[in-house]
Picture 1: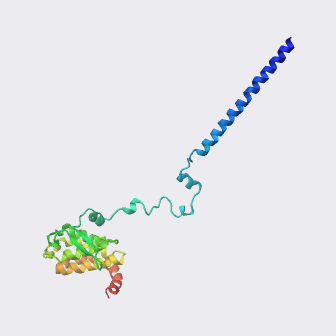
Picture 2: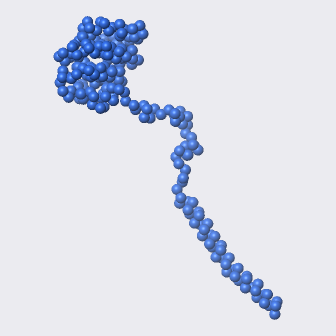
Picture 3: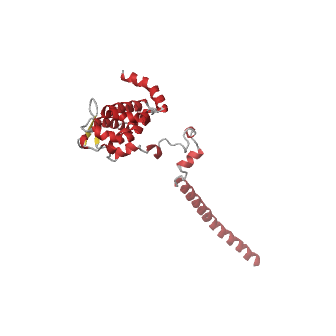
Length: 221
């Protein structure tokens, strides 16, 4: 009796174990499939910056992060460009089919020379359009108005250093604009300019001006 009961108990345990094994294996398979699907469907968490670190480009050596020619620091406008952008120059550039011209907001003879004439003189050192044309043409047209000598003479102590900066500039076109402006100013103010020539024609500036004179003469001729 005892042996038969023990035999029956073993058979019962085997049946229970056999019944549970398929369920256990199937649930494990389902969990494994879910994990694989989630790993496939989940987006990659690797950022472009990390990818660049893992796979550096050859150009990265030529363009280090410390040098950014297109950064904000290279877009800082000059003093003249900032004034022009804010409407501090009371004229606008009119593009023509043959040549450009300036259109003043009011007659130039009604405009105060201080500080407009000095601002235009500072713009002679610009190297980009439209600042180059506006400063050159504006300076010339302002000196042609009635009463220009009386308005320009008091500004000579402040104009001469600005024109000198254009004359010693490394850019030949800037030098040409500065020299033209000096000639135009001398025609307007006459002998009043003589007392200021010693500040303009210093030894250092004379060397630079003399080195550029042949270039300027070749352009004029």
